[in-house]
Image 1 (tube, rainbow, N blue to C red):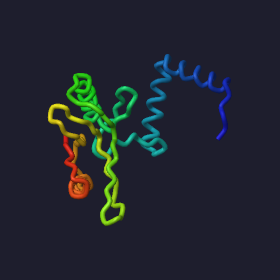
Image 2 (tube, rainbow, N blue to C red):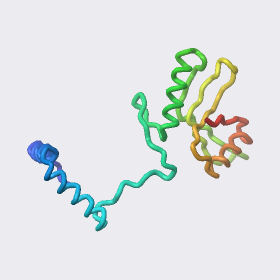
Image 3 (cartoon, rainbow, N blue to C red):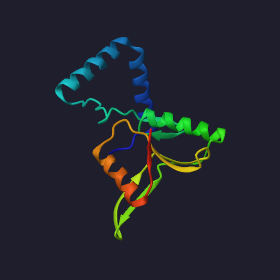
Image 4 (cartoon, rainbow, N blue to C red):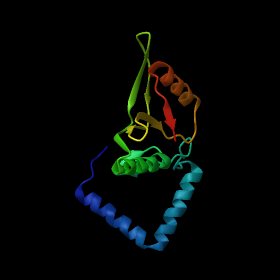
Length: 149
């Protein structure tokens, strides 16, 4: 792979600016893209398996809009003093009989000052069989209840 020089970058940028300003060139680019999709030279963007849309809040990338919205709610609750010690993606190591079984990564962990409990929370749009199994393992091996939102 060759490195582009500053002159190459400027030439490409000028061409891109010109292409954006010329409707005829925009139409050609659209036709070229459609042709590429038809003949297989350009691959279409594939949606995620469960249609989750990655979302960025406060510079943090979340796996879904739902998880990002819940983070905003929890941040507000923390500012209001309802919860403390908010942590993202806490890892729970699951061992049985001296053997490592798996790790479970929840979405959020915090202390609920109203209920006076530690909460492990997971935002779920779709409950997979793997998730259901890991939730049971967490309960059996670590005696932790996962709150689903």
